[in-house]
Image (cartoon, rainbow, N blue to C red; front, side, top):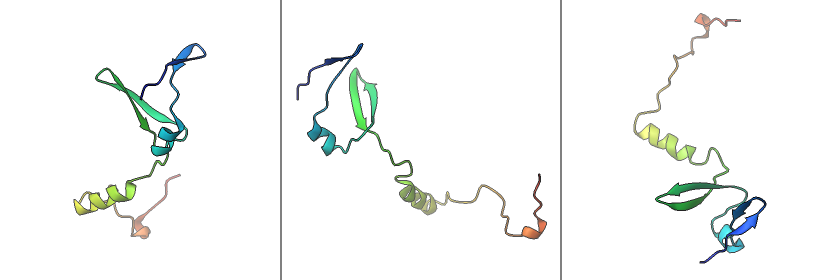
Length: 82
């Protein structure tokens, strides 16, 4: 697909056709990077915790889900510091 580069204020840009935006579920933002002298545009995931459940299950299977802090079950020995 050939797309024209058009003036946008003091810059230049492209218009992404609506059909492509819909296919890629692009709403407000995209990630833009340069790779091997090419511009790569990726949809930006706006759901920050998307995929966490899958990763937590993987951590559990691999035994990487142990607690990083000591067990505080015995509240009798615990004192708050103010």
